[in-house]
Amino acid sequence: MKNVSVIFDIGKTNKKCLVFNEDYSIDSIIKMNFEPIIDDDGDPSEDLYSVIDWITKTLNHFLNSQDYTVTYLNFTTYGATLVHLDSNLKIITPIYSYTKEFPESLTRLFLGRYTDVVEVEAAAPLEGMLNSALQLFWIKNNKPEKFRQIQHSVHFPQFLSFLFTKKLFSGICSIGCHTFLWDYRQNQYHNWITSEGFTNLLPPIMPMWHTEKASVDGKEINIGIGIHDSSAALIPYLKIMPEPFILVSTGTWCVALNPFNCQDFSREILDQQCLNYMSYEQKPVRAAKLFMGFEHELQLKKLLLLFNLEQEYLETIKLNQNVFTAIAHDSCSYFKFENLPNCDPFQPFDEDWDFEHCYYRLIYELVSILVKTIGIAKGNDEFSNLIVDGGFVKNTIFLYALQSRLDGWNIFISNCTYGSALGALLVGEPSLNMVVLESALSIQKLNFN
Image (cartoon, rainbow, N blue to C red; front, side, top):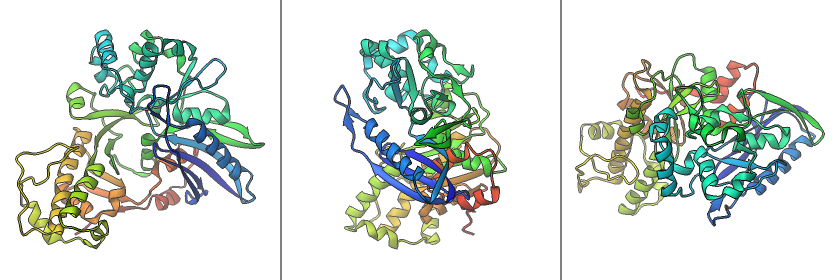
């Protein structure tokens, strides 16, 4: 039997159980999706009981396997999600989704009491249910009888850990991620949290590397306290990179994360669509995000329709540096983006442009916006190392455009597709094999020259 670690990576859509070997390679992956259920207001909600049942059965499968000895268990989940428990530690509300509409009347009530200065102090924009502390504010004002029953409010990753340790903790990564809970200037819970009586509902904060030894199905294992997925994704690179860097995690959202930012948060920074996350070491992480992956898919579909082509045709497009060079000398804008900042005026496509030229143009304009986002995350910091991971790492045209627009930067790509799960594993590792970790991350310096 070999020693393994089991990590549950619970995304909004995709749920995964990853079994890691001691060399950080993946031995097994189990994937699952659950259809949303309806909460008590008729809005979509996470099917929490199905998730719990799947996690329990899946873990028991590996615990009772003749092939494995499970030595470590941890959880990483999406953020802005609370589970509310009563005095008997029973779930008393559905999971209220962060996509749920937040009443305008409550926004006015909040701002009337505390003003918008909270946005700067909490280093995040006021975005209703996406600020998990405002979920408590919403329950208190909209469902007062339910609020009076709440004895504990636990962020999702820490709740999943509690299922097996029977101990309630708070994790600083969940607290510090656009929640409105944390005052980054005072490095403590914000005063408004105390004023509203929320502090007593929040379990004690434990270090992210804390583990509890617990018996699960008769087996003794070390269990982490759970970690927010975006914060977890940074951990492998923080462990291995010798110099400061920005991580650009690409996918539906493209997020530029700067864990080395030294600037105080300000209204000016907030107005640039920037916010703070929290690292596992309780240090602020400057974050700037773009809905770039979604916009890329949207515009790509339009191009394929325009040229009467199928999605598979994109795979035939190879990097042609001459085409890109010609495009880079054209400063006009040809795409009107629906989810990203635009530059007016727009020019129509030339009649002699083929699909390849138009697609190169799309990538060039997307990367131009992304470069500005990276600059916002970088701020005044004096370093020029960039790591790119996620779906766009497979897009050679994107990578070439990025290198061309970031002349003088050291750009690295990582082919690791399970960064959040790996981070949830590494956060509990007392000692690391750096050579093995480097191999697992598969980091390569980008160089088209």
